[in-house]
Length: 156
Image (cartoon, rainbow, N blue to C red):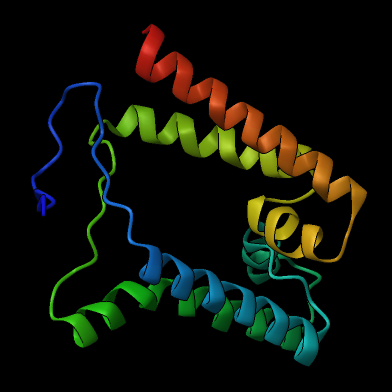
């Protein structure tokens, strides 16, 4: 049986990932459960851009701000919790170019505002509710992601 190699990503254009079906299934189930729990207990959609903006909104009521802050805090504490359970940090790689990361962040923020939501709001919550607008938005997100990978990994 071929063993998966664990190595640090190089500066080449190839990116190596290991498919982990059970961890992926478990993570997807937890994302779905958290979205259902937030909707059932607070009537709010688990769109991360909306929850984050609600934390900093001037006219947001205290209860909505608190729930949003706790949800986002849970996202931020996921990696340290993994460290406590698994004994090692989750494997991930992000580019080390701060300008590239800033531009990417601005583009994602613009897209979330322009699309009236983000991938979690449209892709997880909207599609599960059968929202036609969310289905179209998610198809646009995925097409943009496909085009970005095509250009950055294969054409540039």
